[in-house]
Image (cartoon, rainbow, N blue to C red; front, side, top):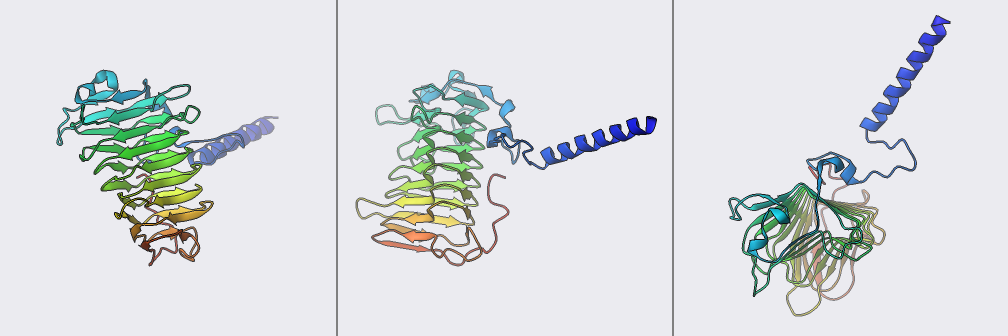
Length: 300
């Protein structure tokens, strides 16, 4: 009898250890479980329970950089930017973007800022964006270690020199949308996956660099729409992993120039059939290419 009890105890301990090992390895043990990026704590991005709930944030002038609008530190200079950090913004039923910063000629935003470690979700139903920046021409903002999920546009940007680093923008209509005339936009070490339409959509006359990103399971990985005037889109897309995008890894519309070298195009065969020049004037180099995924792509 004692031997049977001991055997049962040992078997129970073995099963518990096995389940713990599966959980540690990131394997979902329940078929009905959906684990999003916000439920993990990897690569410097906060886990879901580490955020503090906050109402949507709207900054329309320099005076709006205050504690009520989520500013946690900083003085607004280039050396000491305002920091908006640590917030979860649930947009369910809300008629506002999660974090919106708008600079206008009558009310310019001139201060420097960083949006960091924020989780913004569920704006899709009301057509709201996770983070929306309209900064005219000045290079003054960056977005770091943020998660935007289930919004219309995870991140919508217009301006100059905006940097998006180490972010996750999944399950939105569009992961990141660069509005017309966006200059020197940098998207680095991000995960842009499972968006309904494009991982990244770039509009005309913009200059964008995309490096070390995982771009997968979207309708298109990167989509460029270079219409209007004679100024083309300038795109540099290097060292990215494009995987399982439903239509094209890279959909090039007219007036797009640049290079898309050293990327992984879903398999070891390279970009053939996955980089699609739609129509009009284009010149994008996609060789050489990676035959295996870049292990250093995505949030670090």
